[in-house]
Image (cartoon, rainbow, N blue to C red; front, top):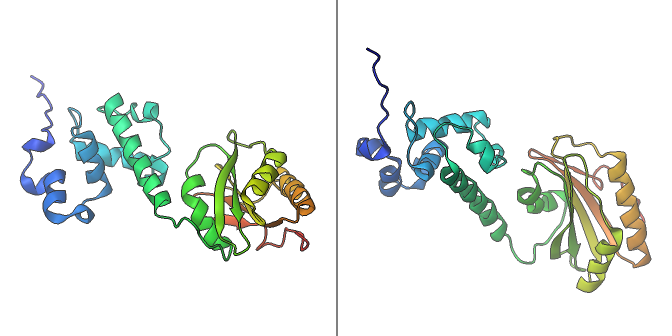
Length: 236
């Protein structure tokens, strides 16, 4: 007779092993990423506890929360024991974490170099699976007046309306711009299309006496700066 595999739910574990109790009595920092996800999903499947299932989900994402945040509800539902409600809970929790990072930023962020601009835009662009093109509009003290998504495209590119970029600059009274877009492929080298759109925006901005200070290509791990690599005309 085949023995039936049984996995106990979290509420039947000893208190020391329960993620909820561990968080309550020892604080959130005491929990592993898998234990935090286990709290979200509540239960596993017949073969795995919630923590074991969460650990496996994390492992398939390289034990990387940023990579996990890229998974869609449908992709999460492919794991045995993850239904729609659990998948939505995971996606929602990771999105809250992303938004928390954004809300912690000062309203008028001072940009002194490419590294500061990268940190400002990383949480917005680094984990996307499609390309987006953003503009940082700055005042004469190099403080950010607004950051604005100009376009959203596919895996390999996005179209940018230069007129829209300039229209918003005039509305905000911006005196300089920093361009930023992501490369989902992870490559940091600018394409010819990246160079072309940079030059088009520089040309349009020049007629309005607006400077283009930089163009950043952002990936999950790092960034490429046109300014740092001397790819911007000195007259911009």
